[in-house]
Length: 204
Image (cartoon, rainbow, N blue to C red; front, side, top):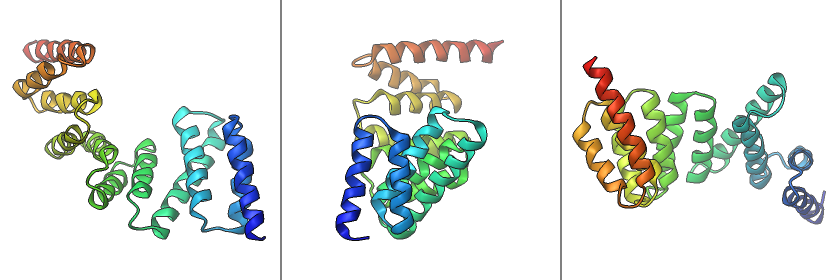
């Protein structure tokens, strides 16, 4: 098929996405990849749509498993085609995290942060996976880097405070709570409640 034919399919897929008909867009991406199996745009788009459905828990169990596998296959293919693309590694890490493949997810997020040290989402994802692995010291370092890059986002601060609580370091958690009170009092209050529950459990 000519380049014109490729552009026509791409525009058709984008039109389906624009009006929220993701399933129809997927069929177009399938068609594109049957003709251009290494097309980065179609691979990334199909991986994103299948991964999005995976995260939302849509579809029947068997069909969903197939979409999850397809998303991972496409994302892994992208890292082969573009091994220095930090976003490709981040997207793969996200899918692996969702699939609870913690070791592989940590490696993918780690690769993303190496390629792009300013990619705050990759540091956050790496922190979450390291928490899952109970590698709290490494998780704290990753989340600290995330908060340096996104100082006004409460998510990294919240997870970092939780790590300090899990490491039995309430003083560091208290510092974060005081900091959050300045711009995210709701999150600070939630952390205070969780810290109190942990303290009560420890004293029981």
